[in-house]
Length: 169
Image (cartoon, rainbow, N blue to C red; front, side, top):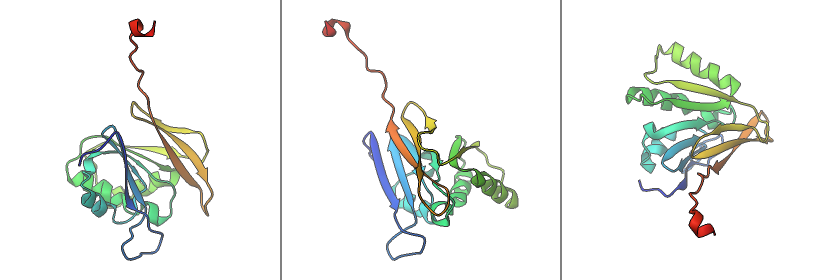
């Protein structure tokens, strides 16, 4: 799967109820080779396979809020990554209660992940920086919804450009 520097693959745009040809919310953002998953509704694994996007390339998962159509595919994806032998750290960003949901599911299934999973709680406070690395800066946006909901603004991190002093003068 060849990508440019900043690609967005829409995996699902459906609503809470199933609809023919539509899948629950999930988008894959690829920035300079790093994969960021935004929301993870049911069926996200199948949509990732259809898109040719390897699960283990995902470094960060961002969950906007805790309505099922935005996160019910998360545990299946986390489990599949474990079964596929993932060793790379996975960062999950989402509402505070999501951490407990993940822990309860792992404990109930007696699953001990072979990879580190780091949870980053988010609050719907506009302007807060949720993540920053050499590729992107992710800021939070407070959204209006029935429950607390966070949007994510991805901005490309710009590396300092090398300057050639002789050409500046």
